[in-house]
Image 1 (spheres, rainbow, N blue to C red):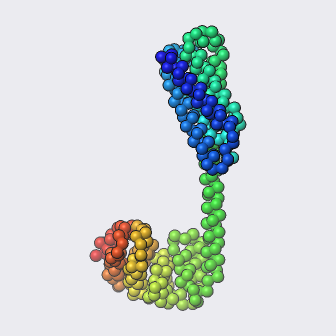
Image 2: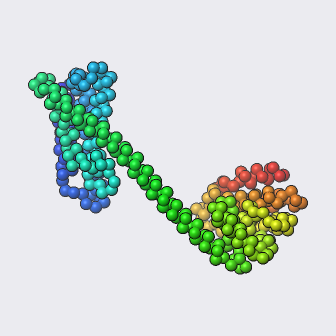
Image 3: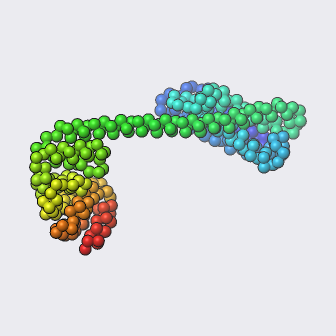
Amino acid sequence: MSLLGNILLVIATNIFFGIVSLIFGKDPRGGDGLMGYAWGMIYLNLAFAVVMILASFIIGAKGGFEWVAKTSASRFWLVTIGLLGAVITTSLGGLFRFENGPVPFLIRSTSSFGPVLIPLVLIVSGFILLNSGLKATVPLPVYKWPLVFVSIFGVVGVASAIIGEIALTQRNRAAVMKDNKAFYDANDARILSEIDSCDVSKNLVFILVYTGDNQDPEIKNKAVAKVKTHPEWEQELIRLLQTDWAAEPLQFLAFNDVDHPVLFLEPVRLGVLNQARLMREGINRCSHPSHFYPGMFNWEVERVLRTVDRFGGQGVDYLPAVKEVRAALDEPSPFEKPEFNCLPALDAWIKKHA
């Protein structure tokens, strides 16, 4: 068993020299060089860890760790944690030696000697603990305190790496949130500017998309108020319901009240039929399977159902028109269509009102 352990430690020594030559060799330049260095460091440290773990089992079986703790369970966990911590810290130190980005302070500050000192202490101490003759002649403090040091250093290094990664993740998340807020603020400012500059006598249709509850309240309220500056805004909505722009007035009507609901009862029915026609045409325009996706027509169907619910029960039966919307989704196509996400809600509405 001692022979096998010594062979493993000799292998570990050769791997150690490979790690040293990689660390102190020519600085890696460029993408391929850095990737080669990184993968080389990973493979060498992984091999070193496996060999040292096997050697440690043999040392433990021969009673080489009796000095660590009184019970075998305590010895096992202390040796395992210390060894893994030391090996992982060594790996991180070597791996990030040439990293220009953020690296935990302890890992960066010790990357010039940690990847050399720690494996060296483990190998030398391993030979001493494995061979009875050496162990009998070498005083306990000579190998005990270096092993205690590298074990503590390793555990602290791993903890530092974990804390550093958590801190980096938090900083990145905060930066992303800041960027997102800046983007949305700029987008909101652009939309508000569009609403302000809109000539409702000619282009009212272009701000109707901003009048739904999916918009920021400031944007929605401003868009609705702007729409109502048109002296005949209700008549303009009615006109648009009978055109290819039917989806836009349906957006307004799905979320906002009108002054004279009775005027909209029949135009809403015509608008839903127009929406069904536009959906059929949309399917027919698809010229590739990738043009279809499950969320297709979600917006249109939701606005139709919301609108007919707001104007239903006042003398106009919207069920036939909604069925036309459902039939439009079955429009044949030479390409395979997905199961549209809007179908369950649409089928449920039709079943409820049939």
